[in-house]
Length: 201
Image (cartoon, rainbow, N blue to C red):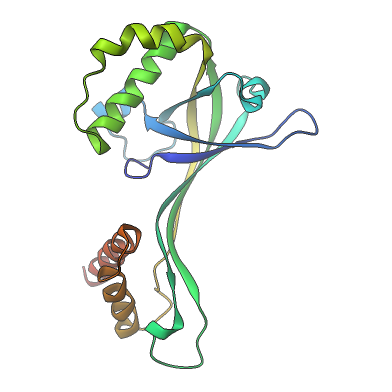
């Protein structure tokens, strides 16, 4: 989730327009970073969206929600296998988080969620941008931002990394991805390498 924070946030709707789904960045609550739990159940995640979004308007206290995080993924062509018959497939990693929503109504708390999000994303993906000079701007636009906490009730990780193939074929797919032209393929190869290490541990 930290390496792939853009989640699909899904909730039911109260009318014919639902269910709703919005892509948005989600980050751990700062307390989670300070004292990482041994399991995610009960932990809190933070997110925010535009208050004009119909999904925000439909959110209710303690409403169940799902966050779907897609990790590295890549297409596997049967040409990599070097045998027939074969079928194409898609290697992927994903996490699905279920929880309950708490809408944040206070502008100061909402600003805190935005700041926490900036800190997390800058630390992981940015260049150390200092938001100090932009806080007044944040305060001017914060009225249009809807922030929420999600308390995790269940967390599931899913992956398909050619584990159904024999070791030689898996390694061929991993090497193909590692030499591929996209970062997504290289990341998928990295995860396949981790799986292979775990199998040999």
